[in-house]
Length: 183
Image 1 (cartoon, rainbow, N blue to C red):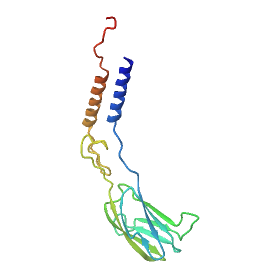
Image 2 (image 1 turned 30 degrees about the horizontal axis):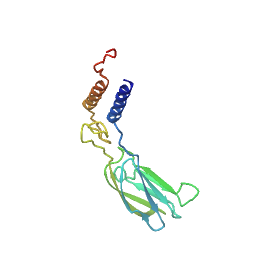
Image 3 (image 1 turned 45 degrees about the vertical axis):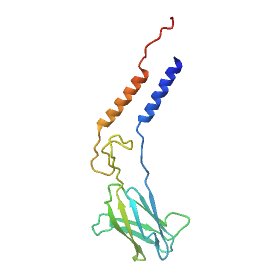
Image 4 (image 1 turned 180 degrees about the vertical axis):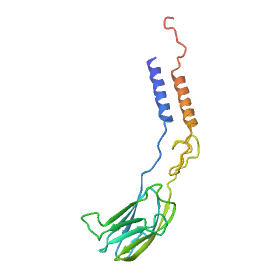
């Protein structure tokens, strides 16, 4: 009898573990550019929003990074990387591509040195969209889409999953016919 109850408890725990939603995701990425005396490497990049682009200045000149974030002709992002200094991080420039703050597309990044354009690079930003396909997809609720203005959620999927879990647990613990031990 005790072994049977332990077996049912083990089955119930396994079912609960199988039906609990799992999380699928990723952290923010970083993309690095190295500004040398005569060149920048790489000269173009494709990144997702919510990433950080980092410019390391290994030259002896100050470099200013300019990006027209809103595409209105004015530099919306400006970041200064001082001349190379191994004892601090003042020679690097970090720009976070905040979700919802950038449109998908190609941006020209201008790098200024000694008051003139030293170099430019092409930065392609893609939106980090997560769109689910099926209603029983364990990566997220149905209708979920990251970075969209409206997020549809479906309560039906959660109710369905809870109903299945309840039926399995009831079946596992439903009292079976009792045997008469006195016979």
